[in-house]
Length: 174
Image (cartoon, rainbow, N blue to C red):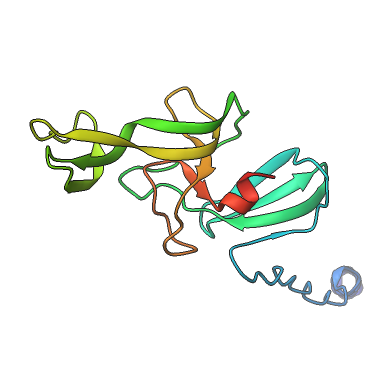
């Protein structure tokens, strides 16, 4: 019986030793590319086939097939107007689009009274007018008006829009 016990202990010890592997080294952390300025382009005359947007970083990477050919800061929707997530197809392209919802409101004398006017939310002063927000190079992604277009990015890395993704004009025109 002692002999059986020693054999069992020896077998367990050998099995345990066999399962002990030399620890693998920690994977090398891959540094994200250094980004200088508001955007970068290295694609020459290559066409953009798809765009990946990181809403946490507020950065879009531009791809030609599997190759990253450029990047840009974007300004996506603030928390009260979040940008939807998912995979989208461009369903419309309009080079000189103007918003039918957002813009600036002026009174009858032409004085700016609301720089963030929204139709249906805000009242237009009597005799006043709404100047629609310009949305050049608009790429419509949803049927309810969300897309990508040229717009101000007041704080790179921070959301700032009503749901669309704003980008610099130099990158939007590529």
